[in-house]
Length: 134
Image 1 (cartoon, rainbow, N blue to C red):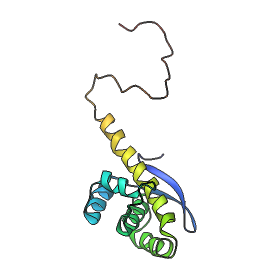
Image 2: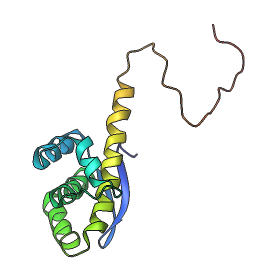
Image 3: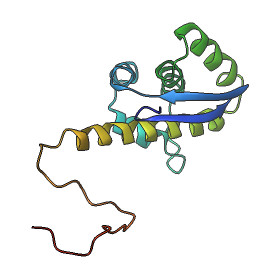
Image 4: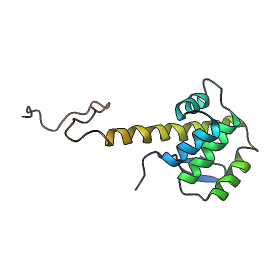
């Protein structure tokens, strides 16, 4: 079963699960001195405002949230962020924070008060029945 915000990506020497849960988001914001939304903006490839601390912490915390031990995550970051072009790490970090944001938003929807209609889906899918509901 996949958890909210989990994303599987190629990184370094393999394919790994990344996830920014709420604990990882809190630590990320503390370490980077910015909100997740600001970090996401800085990592946007079109803006080219990423900081090394953003890239390294997103990847490290995403690996930890995905199930890797903190020591192994740090080794991967040192090996594959420090030794590679920063754009490669930035692209991975950007995908991880976007998945983290999706996780935050999906939790908000799950917390909607009972009895309220769910948000309409953007895909344009329609109900199986065309009869009006009481």
